[in-house]
Amino acid sequence: MTNPVPTVRPRPTVAELPRYSRAAGLSQIRWRASSNESTVPPSPLVQKAIVDAAAHANLYPSLQGDQLVEDLSERLQVTPEQIVVGGGSLALLQHTLAAYTGAGTQVVHAWRSYEAYPILIGVVGATAVPVALDADHTHDVDAMLAAVTPATRAIIVCNPNNPTGTELPRTEIERIVTSVPDNVLVLLDEAYQEFATADVDGLSLVRHHPNVVVFRTFSKAYGLAGLRAGYMIAHPDIADNVRAAAPPFGLSLLAEAGARAAWSDIAHTDHIVEVVCDGREYLRREAARRGLKTPVSGANFVWFPVGSRALEFADACVEQGVSVRAFEGEGVRVTVGDRDAEDAVLTAIDSLDWQSARLERCAPGR
Image (cartoon, rainbow, N blue to C red; front, side, top):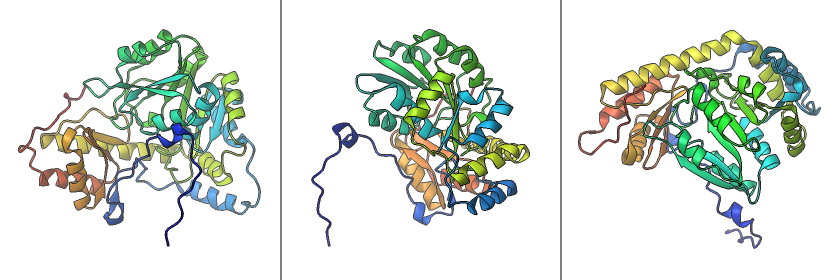
């Protein structure tokens, strides 16, 4: 039986939003290297904390993740009033855009960057202003600054960048912060900060620039992608407005318990980071031996800028039992951390005739 077509219609901006992509071949693969998840399970401390918290699942969580906020405040040396926690850093970015942008405003961001940005910007009614990456697959700071207009209310900087893994050095981040007007928010998405190779710490910028906001997550280096927990750090006034724009009880009881336990288990986080760094070095080195140059990555993945052969590359990986994330006409992103999956990707590379067509290689790594 065919369901009747609804006659209600979404707002025009919603109807035109891009849809978040799915990796191909998920039903037929052995390894998932398409979602930038940790290949290392959560620590035993996290698992126990979740089980213990589940016994109280009949109760609401704290209104604003109060205990996690206290833990973060103590180690990061910022006040609790500067911290907002929620169901992943992406949700917090959405609330920030809702609080500070909207119809008639613009949000500048690099492209290609995280594919959710145009969606979040469109949902709040603002206009996305994408700025192409430079030849090294890195944010083009000059072009991004040139794109700022009187209508600009925020500029998003994903550092390290998803999906290319490239990083801006501290001097370039500071140039963005000091060049934009004071009424423009600089939103630093540091989801992969724990894996970074550059000397960037957004917290120091927050301390000196009231228009800087830092977003971080427990999904990557803490291995909690399935729990959805993240935090942002900002001037107390900005944090207060973001809380006002967010639904109450934004962090579940289990997510808060798991995040607190993961935050306390520093050794386990260090282990996850070590596994990632080893995996990305191995994959980049072995790919280079096969003639595929990749940008230096500061994240838990490697970017293959194979251009028009992206879908072909992804299909070859699926044939070897591993899913990857392909961006048609641009490249392929491969999550690292499982040596068998990395070897499957290398086998896929070996199965393709890279000499039969022009391969769009990136510049040698920095």
